Length: 216
Image: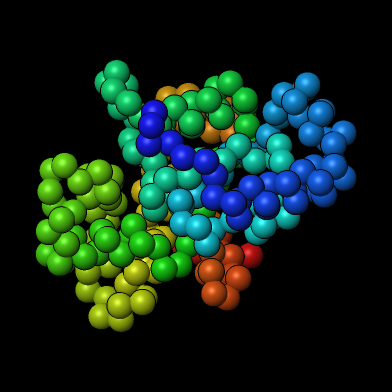
């Protein structure tokens, strides 16, 4: 582990600042979380993008959300093949062990992963076509949905449409997990699809009755 180095000094300073204020002012709550364990009511699957902060959007405290982040907030289909499945493992833990009541898929504007998928589908990203590209193979989950937005000539609108398709394909794939579909049918779990506009601070929610996104 010779490659591991000490933290950059600016992070050390920020940590000490948090410990002296944020932690010190809420010490009892942190002790409660540590001693009693987590009991989140919702799981949020969001993008790795550094501009997306779920806790800030909903004004949430530690312990409220079981959070999982990956490139383009995608959920793969149920594949119990004995391989490594980080997102599926997080979903299983949240639903089967923490018994969350809600699973939220949160997409966002200007998503780099979705842009990569568009470039790949348009033949402009040969590096993502490489069989060894982790990003490219991950974006294959979304790739079939490109045909639904291919005719859009406005680049920004096309990206937003595919960002929302990423949310929908994740919701579709969530329902392929038996332990999810069973709970949804029993009324013990609800699924939600959200899209946020980073620059405008907007939030849209998918309505299955109208099959469209509406502002919250």
